[in-house]
Length: 294
Image (cartoon, rainbow, N blue to C red):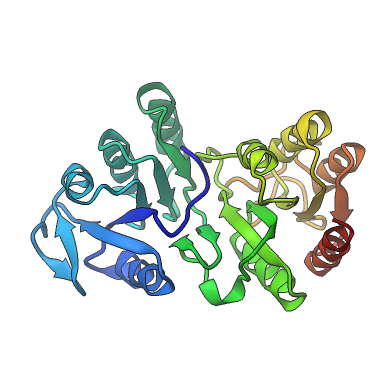
């Protein structure tokens, strides 16, 4: 249940026969990702540009040996697709679907933890993850990312994920893995999960963390950095000017009272030794200085 993918990762695409799943699944395939199967309960036996479609994830996994699933189906069926992939033994599920009710996310999270602990969920409502030059599962444009490391990226914001990748590429800085964890209230993978993985990864030598208002995940990340990270971390927190009680972008970005503000998160991260930028461009510049000093 690692966050890392590479050229050998075999991917099943749920809903490959149409819509977002077809568009992004084929883009991932064209990037070089091994998209080995599609899943559609009523179109099993068909093909999409030479990729076989199976009626169930279990059939797709049995036929191809896939270890990852890409879920890009409507919100009403996405939870079932995630759990179907987990039940089939898929180790990594990336779900980009937006609009899944929070109670359904909580149910899926609980079921994965209790019944399928060997499956990691990235998302939902996220851009996915990319290991530049190796594998791309999700909706990130591969051309904005430079391969070769040494930076790992973890982000709650989809748009700022893309900007971070492009800012670093413009400065000639490569990325090992970039994970968009999504901003919904119950994400399958957290900042701490990714920071722990990056800390253990020998190829990742510095980490960029992009957070935003709402919740307390950034404060938890700050505590992890303070207690367990040895690698330098640069961070940017979006939403400094957002008024309390107002949603910014998605359901996870809501400030409750004095908790979840950008200022509180920034202070916690600074206290943990993180270099905190005031805007995305400055985050890239700070990371360039970190990389230069490695």
